Image (cartoon, helix red, strand yellow):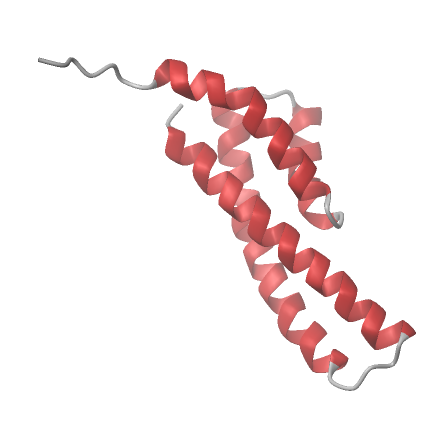
Length: 112
């Protein structure tokens, strides 16, 4: 597996996680605190999170298929983008698991 597969998953996990936390804060501001401007904020963040979550799903599925994960693990990683802060913890666990495998697959360069 190429390192770029893991890297693009990690980037999208962080982006999705940050947007989901922002969306959660926006919803709290909109519905619980009745803040001015929270409606527009949540509208923009929800659209961004929705589209980027689709990209996250594609990259996570690609990573899971190349890592040959069982279906249950793949579903958990895919759903991590819908639970606030879960993407951060799942990304860290996945990275720790796969980084040694990515390093093993790296081509060895000969030094002269």
